[in-house]
Length: 123
Image 1 (cartoon, one colour):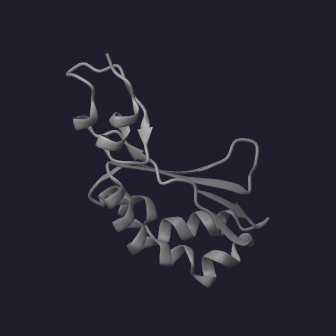
Image 2 (cartoon, rainbow, N blue to C red):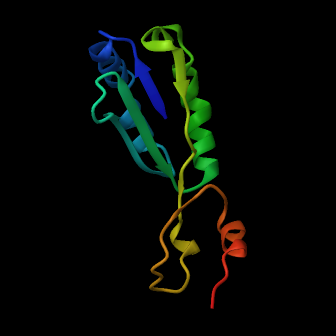
């Protein structure tokens, strides 16, 4: 997800992320594989919130509990046009999706294993 922060609000944005324990809470959420917040290279006002989940269900549970924070007036006030762009969700390939015991296939999916493998031709 992308947050374009108003000029001069970068410190407030970082403090808000820290005060809400956004990263820590995401990492404690069952099914979270990774969660990062970082500033975009070359743009002091653009922050990217990157998360990976082991299933769409885990992402949906986290989103239901967390997204009201992103709708708060305090959060929106820090953003250019008050908008927060959500990209994703990104769901990592669970180990059970691996093709064989030493699969070299590695990719991110936005669907369940059966749906993904049904679209991929294998030998």
